[in-house]
Length: 212
Ligand SMILES: *[C@@H]1O[C@H](CO)[C@@H](O)[C@H](O)[C@H]1NC(C)=O
Image (cartoon, rainbow, N blue to C red; front, side, top):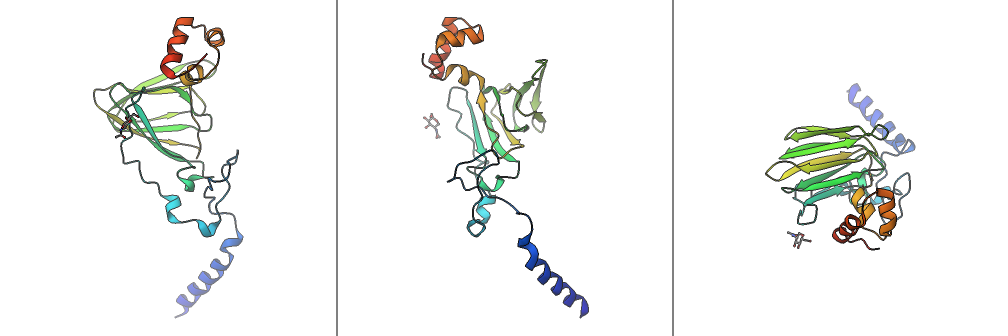
């Protein structure tokens, strides 16, 4: 008799003070621009459970492309619930011969978990340029520290699938080859800053859609 009454009083008093404390979450409003602290928060009344649920990582990505790889991302713009939480997740599909070329995520560290197949993955340290790479099999996990150049490629004879998670809701992505050869930076400047010869630069610009 006494205990249930006490419990009811506790519930009443805690519910009346719940909204006076810190924000529980800041679901992204992707219609507004993002900034260093992430997206602005959706009005709590407009938040639904679907903001915290992402469907689609069970579906294979389309690897019919130059790199024979597909990354399906659940980042803040498409998975608004992760905004402000410092996490996100994605699915990586690597067809046979598929490769995620040398790249970096300026905004976060990455952890990769192999679901299927065989993936050779590695990263390069920033000052010593030490290379850390390994062939990973089903069940293996590898971590890639924030900002460091890294790569993954299918080193097996079957499709490879991995789940990758990031320590940021918007980790960003810069692929070295695309940065060098998929834009209009003049060839002579690319050659000067990479020590590559003209024929190689023109060939890669052609393959990757660059001009100049
Ligand atoms: C996969 O991508 C290719 C190239 O963009 C496209 O031609 C093809 O229709 C896509 N396949 C599927 C199943 O969406």
